[in-house]
Length: 272
Ligand code: F3S
Image (cartoon, rainbow, N blue to C red; front, top):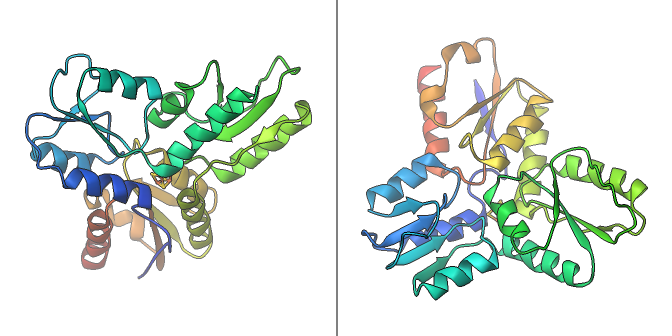
């Protein structure tokens, strides 16, 4: 059985950068990660073992270091942390930071911001938290007041095709719509390479956390082309998936470490 791995898959530079910063921390009781540093349970569990705690908010923290995740937070929250005299280690991905800068600038220029994103995702909450009253859409655009200046942006890990499709629909309804494609390059490359590989194989395995937005997107894209299984670790592989399959394609989300991908490949080679 042949196994091919998508050219761009696994850790993106933003996640690598965030983890590098956190791995340099010695750990202990006074280091707290606000939310999930990255969406990967296995990596987070390793950090927990170092004594680093995961928290949802800073309300009860009066001493120590707060790590801001790669997904970013609203400016106001950073200010609040500073006011409490807590140390900040900011691992916000520069490409998420860029979306913050673009959207704040556009709002100052009088645009109402439409964000293509998941309302509950930390990144979207961070972007929206800096804006007055953004519209967040995940599917069909329902914009009622058409007489305003609008700008359309995206969560960095959304599906490129869907973004283009919605942008076209919005353009037809909103005169002078400003479109800023803020999907990050790492996401675009992962999506393109996964799509190309899916066309050549009998089955795709998408590896990554079930809560990882970009991993879910890869699964959605591949499953439109070929049989696709989304797994978090090698333990979930099933022998029956590999019956009559000659060529398996593998891709992994931007927050999936190499060691998890390697263990999946090893298990396929040794057992199926
Ligand atoms: Fe950054 Fe894109 Fe990765 S926004 S964290 S490089 S998926």
